[in-house]
Length: 270
Image 1 (cartoon, helix red, strand yellow):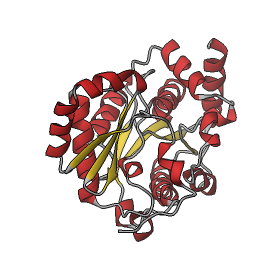
Image 2 (image 1 turned 30 degrees about the vertical axis):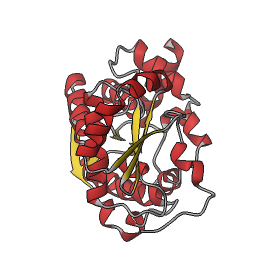
Image 3 (image 1 turned 45 degrees about the horizontal axis):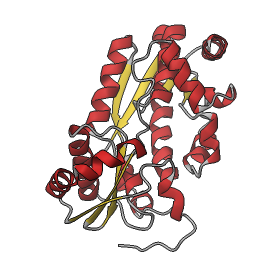
Image 4 (image 1 turned 180 degrees about the vertical axis):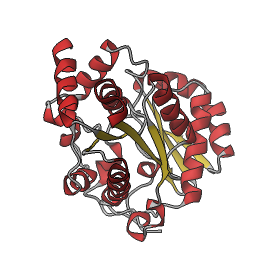
């Protein structure tokens, strides 16, 4: 990993200055950490906040930036008020990222920063991610893609650098829990967020609460499925308290990209 980290250091140093779109996940955290290390005050982390971001994730992002001493801004984003986003078509992520990069471009200009960087890694290119189109249109740089670093490379590098979140589970925005074609609303995002926070409070680490009207479909890591079934009564209780009427456990467990399994299937509006 030493060579991979040195390559990343050299690349970000060559940027000269950078605004890092920092979601709080391990990918963008590593970019921010190395950018701060190499560029100092010429690096700035940006986290946009909205109803689709769990408060716990916002707090974690703030805490991480403070621990490493990086400059960090929180800016409100309003993608949920864009009808194209709220209607939740398969291109929803494009409108979300367009809003993010529009804000990032403005902030970078205000601070005189030459580049905008994100945490996209090489593995991300193999999934359906319309947000990548928004990044290309906004001339956002992806240092891990430039260096052909996979998700495992990122985790290994973060661990080698002593970043405590090197093994943090992936956490996409809450809107990704709502099936395509079912509109995104603040109330629905609140229900999902409250349910997921409650399940994390029970000790589950890798999870998703998928919204299906008044039914919650819960995905947990395969290693946690047996425990989830054993604690099904408690799980049902806390998820119902978040506003759902029915609670189910997905027997396939958590898997990356499950939200996109139905991209080619008809979707319902409502």
